[in-house]
Length: 408
Image 1 (cartoon, rainbow, N blue to C red):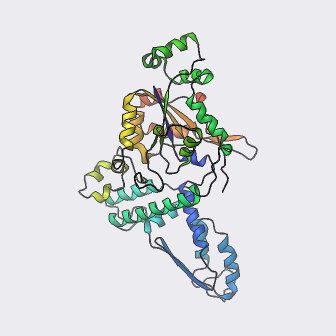
Image 2 (cartoon, rainbow, N blue to C red):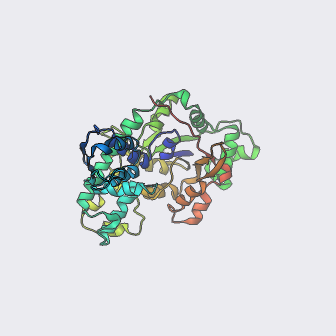
Image 3 (cartoon, one colour):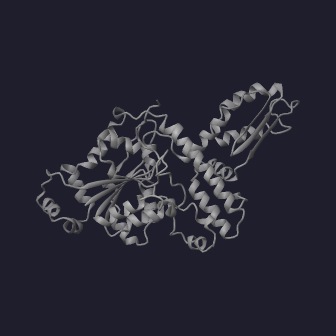
């Protein structure tokens, strides 16, 4: 029997790494503020925006202070609106001129979404795509055609790649002494004996245990837990970052047990797979029936075929029965096709969730997202009875440890 450990973005976030889309977008706007020379007249332009400032002398010092404190798109946009042509909240005799123009309209859409405190770039892309297919040419206020949408989506993909390399991979210090809690957790996964073995038996239906291995059944009945059960662990990493790989290096785990299903940063052979992956959606067939491959360019299923990652995963789940461990993957719809293939596979015996806890300042748990995750998991099942049989109940699950890697 095998164990399939699925790693998602929550794994990186649990290490204190700024890898959410919100982190990415906010960092862009902070970086824009850093390039201005704070003269009366200044401008900035790249593939995404064009900004022009012209301040009167009496406004400049106040504007500089406000500008340096910008940490998000919402704050940047508010700043521009406050100093638009003909308006000055401090001295009405002055006339300031500030303007912000988006040259990448898709970037504008996701920035506006970020004000609502949540944005999923891949889902927003798919919603616009569906809108165009249905004749809603202003879906999510996006006015351009599919070719322009794909071009702008690619530009954002490149910007995200640059951000993850510069602000995550090259900025944080991964030292084994900083991650002892996670190191112990991964070592614990690799060993099934004693209490870990007893817990494992509770996670697997008894009938399956007998079917899987007569030796396991014998151990369960006789309650002999001292033996280390021989289960092969394999890791499917949905992240682009190398956080998990660093554990493999430090703990000397065989790298052949790792599948970087969505690619890696700075890799030509396994470039990042950024797109949408829900072919189970009711509208997908409508998109597929359009005789224009531009509409299919950013579906993950086609990008999977550029490497052997997907084939390796299929070979793995076809080879033997397996248990799924979910670490930091929210099971959103952008990966539904792949997750459905795993979860509904006849060899999948159970799905165990490592959830996130939210705590107050005193360290008391306020809430957790276990229920949110299993509700998301349910969307990947066509057979709901099977879903209820496979998901491990909360009493046998545990929260992901939360640590904070230091900056270099």
